[in-house]
Image (cartoon, rainbow, N blue to C red):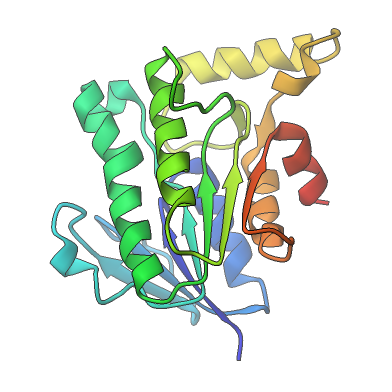
Length: 216
Protein backbone atom coordinates (compact mmCIF):
# COMPACT_ATOMS: atom_id res chain seq x y z
CA UNK A 1 0.00 0.00 0.00
CA UNK A 2 1.19 3.50 -0.77
CA UNK A 3 1.40 6.52 1.49
CA UNK A 4 -1.59 8.69 2.35
CA UNK A 5 -0.89 12.41 2.15
CA UNK A 6 -2.79 15.23 3.80
CA UNK A 7 -2.29 18.72 2.37
CA UNK A 8 -3.24 22.18 3.62
CA UNK A 9 -2.42 25.28 1.62
CA UNK A 10 -3.12 23.47 -1.64
CA UNK A 11 -3.94 26.54 -3.73
CA UNK A 12 -0.81 28.53 -2.95
CA UNK A 13 2.28 28.65 -5.14
CA UNK A 14 4.01 25.72 -3.46
CA UNK A 15 0.79 23.88 -2.65
CA UNK A 16 -0.29 23.81 -6.28
CA UNK A 17 3.06 22.36 -7.37
CA UNK A 18 3.02 19.89 -4.50
CA UNK A 19 -0.44 18.56 -5.35
CA UNK A 20 0.57 18.03 -8.97
CA UNK A 21 3.70 16.14 -7.95
CA UNK A 22 1.97 14.00 -5.35
CA UNK A 23 -0.74 12.95 -7.79
CA UNK A 24 1.97 11.76 -10.18
CA UNK A 25 4.04 10.09 -7.45
CA UNK A 26 3.50 6.32 -7.33
CA UNK A 27 4.58 6.30 -3.67
CA UNK A 28 1.27 7.91 -2.74
CA UNK A 29 -2.05 6.13 -3.00
CA UNK A 30 -4.15 9.13 -1.97
CA UNK A 31 -3.86 12.88 -1.58
CA UNK A 32 -6.36 14.37 0.86
CA UNK A 33 -6.76 18.14 0.64
CA UNK A 34 -8.41 20.22 3.36
CA UNK A 35 -9.51 23.60 2.09
CA UNK A 36 -12.09 26.35 2.53
CA UNK A 37 -13.28 26.15 -1.06
CA UNK A 38 -13.09 23.65 -3.89
CA UNK A 39 -9.86 23.59 -5.89
CA UNK A 40 -11.49 22.06 -8.95
CA UNK A 41 -8.85 19.34 -9.24
CA UNK A 42 -10.04 16.04 -10.68
CA UNK A 43 -7.94 12.89 -10.18
CA UNK A 44 -8.54 9.33 -8.99
CA UNK A 45 -6.15 9.82 -6.04
CA UNK A 46 -7.47 13.25 -5.09
CA UNK A 47 -9.78 13.54 -2.07
CA UNK A 48 -11.11 16.99 -1.21
CA UNK A 49 -12.79 18.14 1.99
CA UNK A 50 -14.22 21.62 2.45
CA UNK A 51 -13.62 22.64 6.06
CA UNK A 52 -13.84 25.59 8.43
CA UNK A 53 -10.43 26.19 10.00
CA UNK A 54 -12.18 28.00 12.85
CA UNK A 55 -14.14 24.86 13.75
CA UNK A 56 -12.08 21.73 14.57
CA UNK A 57 -15.22 19.61 14.39
CA UNK A 58 -15.13 20.03 10.60
CA UNK A 59 -11.69 18.47 10.24
CA UNK A 60 -10.59 16.58 13.36
CA UNK A 61 -11.82 13.22 12.05
CA UNK A 62 -10.19 13.78 8.66
CA UNK A 63 -6.61 13.96 9.89
CA UNK A 64 -5.63 10.35 9.41
CA UNK A 65 -2.80 9.42 7.08
CA UNK A 66 0.97 9.15 6.85
CA UNK A 67 2.32 12.58 5.92
CA UNK A 68 0.95 16.05 6.61
CA UNK A 69 2.18 18.63 4.10
CA UNK A 70 1.58 22.12 5.45
CA UNK A 71 1.96 24.99 2.98
CA UNK A 72 -0.49 27.52 4.36
CA UNK A 73 0.40 31.18 4.32
CA UNK A 74 -0.79 34.61 3.31
CA UNK A 75 0.32 38.23 3.19
CA UNK A 76 -0.77 41.02 5.49
CA UNK A 77 -2.23 42.78 2.45
CA UNK A 78 -4.43 39.79 1.60
CA UNK A 79 -5.30 39.03 5.23
CA UNK A 80 -6.10 42.65 6.07
CA UNK A 81 -4.35 42.81 9.44
CA UNK A 82 -1.59 41.24 11.50
CA UNK A 83 -4.14 39.39 13.61
CA UNK A 84 -5.77 37.90 10.51
CA UNK A 85 -2.40 36.92 9.05
CA UNK A 86 -1.38 35.32 12.34
CA UNK A 87 -4.46 33.10 12.20
CA UNK A 88 -3.64 31.84 8.70
CA UNK A 89 0.11 31.53 9.17
CA UNK A 90 0.21 30.17 12.73
CA UNK A 91 -3.07 29.25 14.37
CA UNK A 92 -4.71 27.28 11.56
CA UNK A 93 -1.66 25.17 10.55
CA UNK A 94 -0.77 24.53 14.18
CA UNK A 95 -4.31 23.36 15.04
CA UNK A 96 -4.24 20.99 12.06
CA UNK A 97 -0.76 19.70 12.92
CA UNK A 98 -1.60 19.19 16.58
CA UNK A 99 -4.63 17.04 15.82
CA UNK A 100 -2.76 15.18 13.08
CA UNK A 101 0.05 14.29 15.50
CA UNK A 102 -2.52 13.01 18.00
CA UNK A 103 -4.23 11.00 15.25
CA UNK A 104 -1.14 8.98 14.39
CA UNK A 105 0.23 10.92 11.41
CA UNK A 106 3.96 10.19 11.62
CA UNK A 107 5.46 12.98 9.51
CA UNK A 108 4.88 16.70 9.13
CA UNK A 109 6.51 18.64 6.29
CA UNK A 110 6.16 22.39 6.82
CA UNK A 111 6.86 25.34 4.53
CA UNK A 112 8.39 28.13 6.58
CA UNK A 113 10.52 31.07 5.47
CA UNK A 114 14.12 32.17 5.23
CA UNK A 115 15.11 33.96 8.42
CA UNK A 116 12.31 32.40 10.48
CA UNK A 117 13.02 33.16 14.12
CA UNK A 118 10.56 33.40 17.00
CA UNK A 119 12.71 36.17 18.50
CA UNK A 120 12.87 38.29 15.35
CA UNK A 121 11.79 41.93 15.43
CA UNK A 122 10.21 41.41 12.00
CA UNK A 123 6.58 40.33 12.27
CA UNK A 124 6.61 37.88 9.38
CA UNK A 125 9.83 36.05 10.25
CA UNK A 126 8.80 36.04 13.92
CA UNK A 127 5.47 34.30 13.34
CA UNK A 128 7.08 31.82 10.95
CA UNK A 129 9.68 31.03 13.59
CA UNK A 130 6.98 30.65 16.20
CA UNK A 131 5.13 28.08 14.10
CA UNK A 132 8.39 26.20 13.43
CA UNK A 133 9.03 25.95 17.17
CA UNK A 134 5.48 24.91 18.03
CA UNK A 135 5.29 22.17 15.41
CA UNK A 136 8.78 20.88 16.26
CA UNK A 137 7.51 20.11 19.75
CA UNK A 138 4.51 18.05 18.61
CA UNK A 139 4.49 14.26 18.79
CA UNK A 140 5.51 13.52 15.21
CA UNK A 141 8.17 10.93 14.41
CA UNK A 142 9.57 13.28 11.78
CA UNK A 143 9.29 17.02 11.27
CA UNK A 144 10.73 18.57 8.12
CA UNK A 145 10.86 22.37 7.88
CA UNK A 146 11.60 24.14 4.60
CA UNK A 147 12.95 27.70 4.78
CA UNK A 148 13.11 28.90 1.16
CA UNK A 149 13.97 32.38 -0.03
CA UNK A 150 11.69 34.39 -2.32
CA UNK A 151 9.56 32.05 -4.41
CA UNK A 152 9.47 31.92 -8.18
CA UNK A 153 6.56 30.50 -10.18
CA UNK A 154 3.13 31.28 -11.60
CA UNK A 155 0.94 32.77 -8.89
CA UNK A 156 -2.84 32.97 -8.90
CA UNK A 157 -2.63 36.46 -7.41
CA UNK A 158 -0.61 39.47 -8.50
CA UNK A 159 2.14 40.49 -6.06
CA UNK A 160 4.11 43.43 -7.47
CA UNK A 161 6.65 43.46 -4.63
CA UNK A 162 7.58 39.82 -5.14
CA UNK A 163 7.80 40.21 -8.92
CA UNK A 164 10.23 43.09 -8.49
CA UNK A 165 12.13 41.20 -5.79
CA UNK A 166 12.57 38.15 -7.98
CA UNK A 167 13.91 40.21 -10.88
CA UNK A 168 16.34 42.06 -8.61
CA UNK A 169 17.59 38.89 -6.92
CA UNK A 170 18.08 37.15 -10.26
CA UNK A 171 20.64 39.85 -11.00
CA UNK A 172 22.20 40.10 -7.55
CA UNK A 173 22.62 36.32 -7.17
CA UNK A 174 25.85 36.56 -9.15
CA UNK A 175 27.33 38.98 -6.62
CA UNK A 176 29.26 37.70 -3.57
CA UNK A 177 27.04 37.29 -0.52
CA UNK A 178 23.73 37.38 -2.38
CA UNK A 179 23.64 33.83 -3.73
CA UNK A 180 22.02 32.54 -0.54
CA UNK A 181 19.04 34.85 -1.19
CA UNK A 182 18.45 33.87 -4.82
CA UNK A 183 14.88 32.94 -5.86
CA UNK A 184 13.80 29.32 -5.82
CA UNK A 185 11.05 27.88 -7.99
CA UNK A 186 8.05 26.46 -6.15
CA UNK A 187 8.43 23.15 -7.98
CA UNK A 188 11.90 22.71 -6.45
CA UNK A 189 10.56 23.33 -2.95
CA UNK A 190 7.73 20.87 -3.55
CA UNK A 191 10.17 18.22 -4.76
CA UNK A 192 12.37 18.76 -1.71
CA UNK A 193 9.32 18.39 0.52
CA UNK A 194 8.56 15.00 -0.99
CA UNK A 195 12.18 13.87 -0.77
CA UNK A 196 12.59 15.03 2.82
CA UNK A 197 10.57 12.20 4.31
CA UNK A 198 13.36 9.80 3.33
CA UNK A 199 15.94 11.77 5.32
CA UNK A 200 17.19 10.61 8.70
CA UNK A 201 16.55 12.69 11.79
CA UNK A 202 13.58 13.65 13.93
CA UNK A 203 13.46 17.42 13.33
CA UNK A 204 15.27 18.65 10.21
CA UNK A 205 15.38 22.27 9.08
CA UNK A 206 16.40 23.02 5.49
CA UNK A 207 17.71 26.43 4.45
CA UNK A 208 17.92 27.46 0.80
CA UNK A 209 21.04 25.53 -0.24
CA UNK A 210 19.81 22.39 1.51
CA UNK A 211 16.48 22.64 -0.30
CA UNK A 212 18.22 22.81 -3.68
CA UNK A 213 20.34 19.76 -2.79
CA UNK A 214 17.38 17.82 -1.42
CA UNK A 215 15.39 18.39 -4.60
CA UNK A 216 17.98 16.76 -6.86
